[in-house]
Image (cartoon, rainbow, N blue to C red; front, side, top):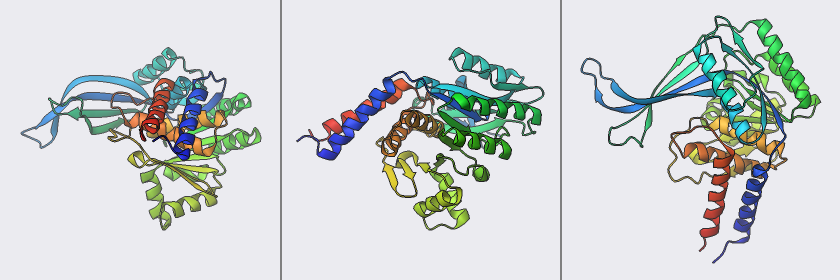
Length: 350
């Protein structure tokens, strides 16, 4: 028995998505947000310290990776889009690692500002397993090195001015707000206003305490736990009711909610689109929002509709959840995932 009409249509759409992603893109994305370093320390742990009941991690390897907006920028470049990254780092070793890594991968860094006496944020993750199960890891601990002192206003002024100017030649604007000072009320307002004037889609990854900055953006991306926190705060009946209230209050075009193992849901004023996760064993959720931002930027630059955008974002999230050794989305692994989804449809009725 072959595929039914719905499955056949879905198969064709997935294959079309893959073909469109494989074509070279000339799209430019202005990306404004916090830049930080992610450090991963791997090892094994099965002992307790006799003097303090804490796990003891025996380190086997470690590596550094760019994080936050820098992570999104690298994903955009990997999908064939040109990222114009605007952010701030300190003049320190972590900042140098970020610049060296981005330059090595061809990401445009000329709009990243290096500030004296600023500490570049470093998120350290300890990832452990038992000695005999090195491929069955879990996050043991995270600790952050950061300094929340205000970024000099003169630096922010120049940064936002450059970003606004770059919107004149851009196809998409992404604002990635981790609450570290790059995105403030005035800067967000200027960026969104200019994007609206140029009819450029705006994708916003907000802090829940910064929703007041998100009025009239086209795409807002939450994780499901974030939506649940807001639901409780505003006393909404359920997730759909909460989404409707947020769409109405802030005049968003779309709210995309990443549910991890529960899939991706897109809410609009008129409809709800849900794409279930097809992974049998999701491994982790680090980097989900970054992957979704990258996928949505690619989708809107290609003129893909909401339905396929939801499927593309879900496939991107599945790529990230399906591996423990790589948290960055690439065109190669996203196209491979679309192929796998198509294949699963084609053999499901054999």
